[in-house]
Image 1: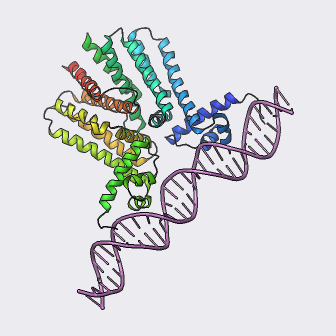
Image 2 (image 1 turned 180 degrees about the vertical axis):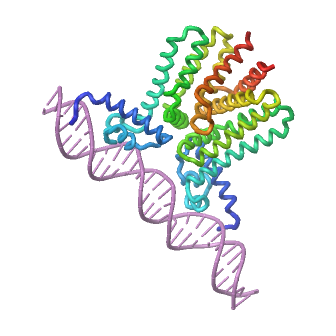
Image 3 (image 1 turned 90 degrees about the vertical axis):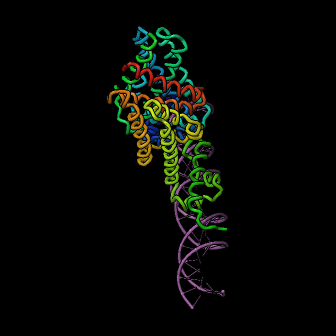
Length: 194
Length: 194
DNA sequence: TATTTTTTATTGATCAGTCAATCAATAAAA
DNA sequence: TTTTATTGATTGACTGATCAATAAAAAATA
């Protein structure tokens, strides 16, 4: 019983379903059928709206990126000092939605996919650059440019590192511990400048 | 023209080929045929010696782990002060063979595989624990236990973070820069204790 | 020593299963 | 009547795994 205007609804449902499926499965080698079933539609419909599996996965990745970006922007609104801005960025990186096992699995899977897919690499690079820029801008009032850049690189690596380690349920570091260690890194580096 | 005693030769060739194929392909979804071709044998032979693709991949991962471990042990022999030991560990993490694109791709792929495969997760956990232990042992003379642990966690995350970022050929940080930033993190943290 | 038997090495052919993609068909809305 | 929504059925390609067949080396036996 087809109702009109389903396209955006189905697209969103399929992207959400893809994320869920990737998370459950722990990799991008999920089938269109799995995703479609999760979304409550047929695999044919998924192809109808996205053309190909690759395209659906890229849209999923875009959604992940957008989610992160929105979270950052939201948190930055309430941050008024440079240090608060740094904390906001860190907090978002480790907040519950980003740190959910399925989200982590998806990010990891996309990192791997970036080895092969130009488009995925391009999208991940955007994330990397945005994070870097945000960090440098927040650090700029607290450190000279060269130093701000280097701290930003260290922080970014630390965030990604904690992130992938969380993927192995083996390194039992709490969210709070990850945040504390990252904050502490910044503090240590800034203190040395004073 | 079968010669006797081929088993160890073929096993090694196949594991090397798997690593190469994974590196080229950028993921674990390589076919047995690809791996076998790379090793110059038939796919049937690969099955003959390893039983299954999964087993071959696990052996490949083991080889990667062993290589890393051997490198660490080798470097630690020449390191006599605590700080030298730390530098040795860092140097190995970023040395050319570990930082080769195909090696990085393989590590990344295994991180993803760990989401699904118990055995892979177990192996990766060994790497994580070993690295942690090595770092803590080296740090112990320089910092109280609790602090040593925390620095070790930060360093480990940083290493892994730089690592996966290297996978995206987008974040152009040289090996030397990664080493310098990691060393610098340790220095900053230790200075604060003095 | 000459022979037969067993073990090891190796592959081409093939099976059985999976999966992305396509398409024709159906039906409700416009 | 055209457009939008939807699916079941099917196709075509791929792939992990198996197996029978071949041949050389080694071991056993005569």
